[in-house]
Image 1: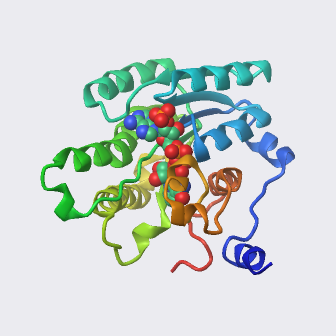
Image 2 (image 1 turned 120 degrees about the vertical axis):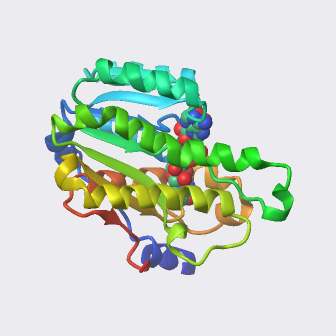
Image 3 (image 1 turned 135 degrees about the vertical axis):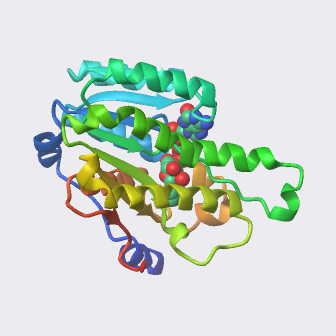
Length: 254
Ligand SMILES: NC(=O)c1ccc[n+]([C@@H]2O[C@H](COP(=O)([O-])OP(=O)(O)OC[C@H]3O[C@@H](n4cnc5c(N)ncnc54)[C@H](OP(=O)(O)O)[C@@H]3O)[C@@H](O)[C@H]2O)c1
């Protein structure tokens, strides 16, 4: 009972009506990174229901293919690219292709991400951990945003970044790679917000609290804590994308 009350207070329920989603997203072109699992998958399912056209990105080809088939069964147009967003060469060539493939885009959800917990003293010979985390959580946001900027400008579109509420707080030991990458992305988005007039594209950040997904549930402590479901997190992203706000933060974050 106490757990239920705690969940209700700290993570008040999030939902959004299918009718409202259809009004806003039907027929719109939406690009989603990290669509194969957790928050990105839940977001994809909501958007399929809403009749959006989708371009899905992550590494798991089988999953992306099946989501695209589901979208097509719902009369949505859907494409995917199975790729590792940390591979700079691959990402740069993909970005070049993407511009011609998608001349008009309404929303780019940069949601793919990886968390890593390792102390700095255990990382002495592991510079690659920092490079990979930065490449996925920060560089892929910038590369895809720049590539799609002309296509997003045509529709006065939006870029929505899935950040973490933990990047707003005093940093907890063990999370240097993750927090540094999320903070770099936050800084990029906050600067883009200031340039909104010239960019013609709105950039938004969701400072997401704990969400039960394959990423967070690897950690036993997190698995047993109250948290949002992936679908509730998808509703947070969608509500933000429909609002005038710059960011989403849980009510208890300041
Ligand atoms: N869960 C939480 O508590 C929480 C809290 C705050 C913020 N977030 C953020 O929410 C976002 C989504 O995370 P999630 O919790 O939904 O985790 P998840 O279930 O593990 O999903 C992560 C997604 O990112 C994709 N991805 C991972 N590495 C990739 C790579 N190298 N190249 C391309 N795609 C890659 C994964 O697809 P493939 O494996 O198929 O590549 C998957 O679709 C992340 O940015 C995370 O930092 C999560």
